[in-house]
Length: 250
Picture 1 (tube, rainbow, N blue to C red):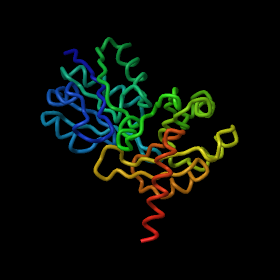
Picture 2 (picture 1 turned 90 degrees about the horizontal axis):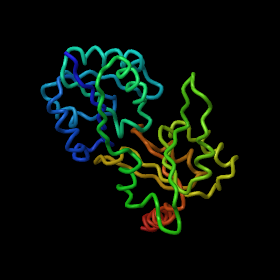
Picture 3 (picture 1 turned 30 degrees about the vertical axis):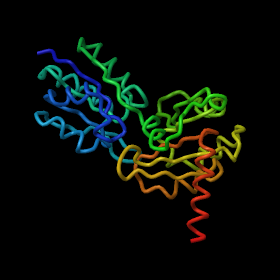
Picture 4 (picture 1 turned 90 degrees about the vertical axis):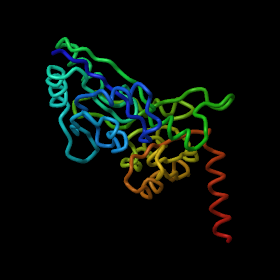
């Protein structure tokens, strides 16, 4: 048998944000290789499938990428529909290209099913547009994380150059991120919003400035957290401070 491997975006976590195609493939799948952060409600859409956890989380034991690649290829030799379920969108910070290249080099069919990435879900939660006429015309999706064998990253230059930034996998390095950006010329007063567990019932948002980023990150509860940054969030920061002052007065 020569099956097809589908790289499917699980979205930010809310099951009803899956695409119809993703839900259909999960229902048809014979085996699902899934990331660590994919919730049970989404995995439950694959009742016939064998579930295999191959997720990666920063600072924790994880499955080596080369081992994931081989398991996907082996599964395609036994099953018609193999789903590789990735958090968010498969093509954004998901190492999808490594899996695509490995499978195609072995003549295995690969199809990609997009998903909603965390930046879009977090922005929807906040009700703040990433782009705004006359204020923000450019958006950068960046991560400060660099693999041991990877070339240096230009994420700092991208953040400084863009009007709005969505910074992935950065809450744990908030001190270094804030220091590096301010040293590169990003104003300390730049508004930031930290969105934890975007799209889920336990979602939480912390507002402040770039200078306050380290202190804000220390207040997160350990869930996946996205850092949003830019002038588009200034009104939200002001409103949050006003709410805090009113609560204190009461």
